[in-house]
Length: 480
Image (cartoon, rainbow, N blue to C red; front, side, top):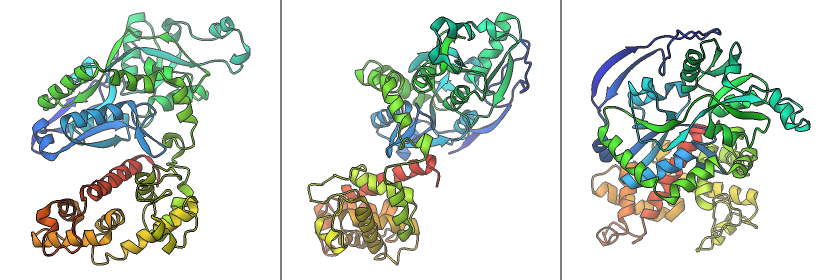
């Protein structure tokens, strides 16, 4: 990537204190953006084969549930990447205030998080065609005894109009469209609304939860997010609008016009399909499903859990010296955490041991989670110790996983071929994995160096890659 422009955009600074007045102007994404805009458009992205999308870990955009990545933006991204013939890589932003900075300095190719299109933001970045519309609403807590009150009594205790906010205090993130809206609202009504700011590490759900628990009095949120959250936080009221309709879209660097054009064309196409509306309804209209996920022990945003078997996996991961989140990714790959899973080869249980291997490991009941994971990690440890000459620990783990999937001897054959063709026999990535995949071709499985013949090499090739891709997602969002 070549840096083409170093620029500093001074922005008008807004006080973070209460008592903001109507003469003050809005900020953009930070008081000063100092970054390098890079040359990386669709041609370079396709050359790399990877679309890097920056998003936020939240209950609607992107999260892990029962070991599976989900979310409105995530599901759309998977379809976009497939359409473009690219591998998707998620870049998880820890601070919403840093989204645009991350994009401009090249941490990702696009922001796949529903930002409101504003004039201030358009000075810095381009927006795709909008994929949703919303309006902003006031979020306020109902009285503690609201369930015993009549509707008119509840309404009388709440703000009923944006004008009622005059002289009161609203809590929002400073670098947000909600902050901008409050500034504009003060100008429209000709009076003061006090603003207290919150850090960018809090997403909209976190802030709405603060209202629900009485930690703050009021906030502003997009209606589509507030509406789905109101199914879970039933003591909040979101009936007061504070804006007209607004467009939500993804964000792309101004230096990536080809990518912008491709994304726009794809959005216009998918919005004509039932698939798009099914995804939208799944996350923003299915309140029962949202409530079920939020109450689950395996909704990682709330609990940090991956599966019902976390404690067992943590226990036996210590034997291997592997991160338990990596072993969780292996278990998910094998069985989707389904203890009754059984493959066509007869392998069964969480970590899919064939009966012969299970017997040799002393496992009497493969459907017992403790026995199954105990046996599976023993076998992984055995395979790991068969690769003592692989110096890099991560590469050694990848050799081990490939051996677990297709057999140790096929991986040995692939390693011999790698060395023959002047590759690095100690490196799995882009070396041994390539020749293992090639062992499905006569030229390679008939080579004199190959002792164990044909193997459908695409399976272990994908197996290892998918486990590590999922492991990266787990690391991004699950505390160690």
